[in-house]
Length: 389
Picture 1 (cartoon, rainbow, N blue to C red):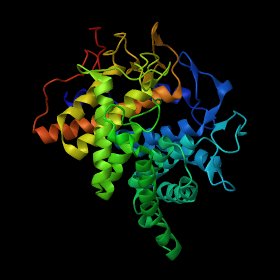
Picture 2: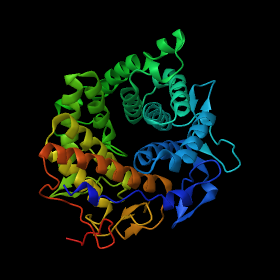
Picture 3: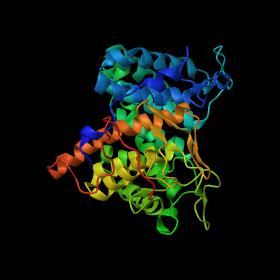
Picture 4: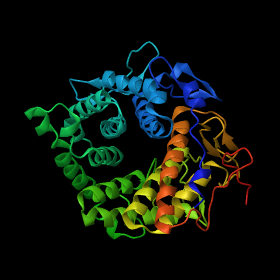
């Protein structure tokens, strides 16, 4: 690992460019927001998570308007009748869907849980906790593994919330909800893997590995750390090790591409590679390192981070650290030059998680420099781009 000082600093230039009156715009043409696609709960929730991390580096006042705006968006997205979050929203404030995707519900819950625990503002913490609790009943009905995994992470982050909300008997009782819901969701996710985990050649709960796959083992590991359940730990490490073996080769991250994905019995699609896959691997490997202390997980996280900076199949930088921006992916023809919200937020999230992981790795090793560093400082003080090797 490299010295934590070498991690790119907080840069919110492109994040500010993507900000609209309601929330962050989903898509961009090059660096310019494409307002015709409007905004979505998915990206606003991710933006809130990034705001909370940035607040630890640059102060709450710098990010408060963005974070408070994101929380307002999530409140408006919540549909009382269904108990679910709507997702897609036009620039005039109207919603394109009555009920959003399960993934959007899970992502909103993660952001709310983190805000309930980490926001420096008491009002933001309490409002986030209340909205989280209102979203819990619908979370128990989630079907898709990725959504279940997100909701499980949210419950593990929040744990008990009684001290975060008004001290009334009702609120104290509601504070137990994340604990019971988390156990239920953990069992449901384990059930989805039933039978698959016994097959070492394909320990996956579906016929294909698709979008944001490392989210599933990460959820198991996060829940294990919170609950102490060895079955969650063992399953999470088994599945993550399998993904790392498939996607990290000679310290180079080669994520499954979304042009065909990875269907059982076939080779993984090589392109198009997306930033969310790199960040998902960083987050899962970080959880595995925290659980085991094994350096190989930190190495996997470094490989995924280096993918952003040019150690990839095209030898081309996907991220632009100077602007805090990220392109939308890597194709056979090179980099996709559009800089949408998901890609940029994945880069900013990756930077902050690596900043913290490197500190923990250095603390375990008792040194500020670890063999095999994958990030170097350029003359401008930013992360340099890797030459193609």
